[in-house]
Each structure stands twice: as C-alpha cells, then as structure tokens.
Image (tube, rainbow over all chains, first blue to last red; front, side, top):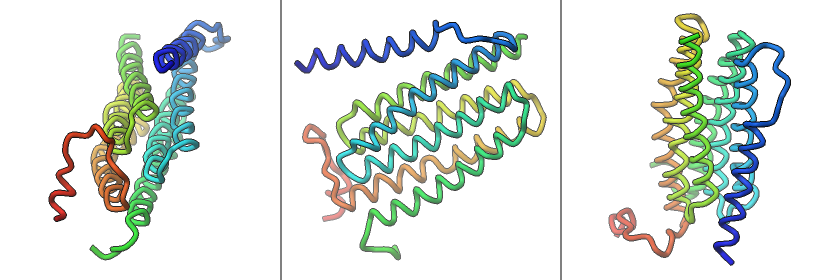
Length: 119
Length: 109
C-alpha cells in the first residue's frame, strides 16, 4: 500500500513537470521569454508543496519552516520576473521581502519558545 | 547569446535545488529533517537564481541589488535556521523515533 502511494506521487510529479516542459505556450518575445515562463511555472509548483505543508503540518514549527521557504521562493519569483521585463524594482521587492521574512521568523521563533524572552 | 545561456544554466540549477528542497519539506518525517532539507532552498537554490540574474544583467543597478541580496541571504539563512531549530526543541517538539542521538537534550541535563 505504501509503495503504491509512493509510485503515485512520483508519477504525479513527473506528469506535472512533463506538462510544464512540453506544453506549447505562446512565445511572442523569443525563446528567452518562453524559458522564463516555464521556470516561473516550475517554481510555482514548488510553492504548492510548501502550501501543502502549511495546511497539513502536525506542529507549529513545521508551519513556520514552510512559511520561511515560501518567502524564499517568492524572492526567486521576483528575480525571475526581473529578467524579461527589464525593471529594476522587482529585485527591490525581493530584498524587502527577505528582510521582512527574516525579522518575522525571528519573532515567531521567540514566540514559539515561549517562556524565556530575555536570554 | 553566450551570457544568456550561462545565466539560464544557473537558473536551471537553482530551480532544481528549490524543487528538491521543497520535496524534502513534504517527504521527510520530522521538523529537524525538514529544516535540514529546506535550507538548501535558500543557500543553493535562490542564491543561484540571483546569480543568474547578476550574470544576465551585468554591472547595472539590478545586478548589484542581486549581489546585495545574495550577501544578505548567506548571512541570515543560518541564523533563522538556528533560531527555528532551537525554539522547536525548547517548545517540546519530539524527534523522529529512529533518530540516533539528541545532543542538545543531553547538554541541558
């Protein structure tokens, strides 16, 4: 039963990646724009894993770890969006998001620890 | 053309590391194992994507911002991972039952 579940998940992930790679998206701006669109879709699929762990995680620490990695993936989205559009401020959004994520992870860690706020 | 191929190669490497890190978030049995897998997303995955952006943009404003972001991530990712694992251990999250040893609990006694 367990092996059937493993193989099912493996087949599902391989099917989604094959769909992302081989689906004929319209490419108006050349192959660079097409590659970056497909890269963006692959990162979005990785983000769905983090959302699943936030939804299902048994403890609060699992949810905080998945939230941290979701913020890092959003930084990757901003970096990929900055290449074909040629705008500088996408990476500004990424830097601000990383700073905010770091501070919030520190605060959530101290909140999770609970008792000793001063050591 | 050559510069674009090199930078897209770095982006492919980064997306691969991101994918395997997020797969580890789903598949591993424990908070500490998940943290060990998922920090590879930060230092290898997203830093590689940002390095690809730096190679594509060259020494312009976006490229220097990408280098700044890489430095910031390399400084803060180990700190946040350490804070998370320490607070999870102190708030009483159990280890996986097949874990070999728990040095932090031995140190606390």
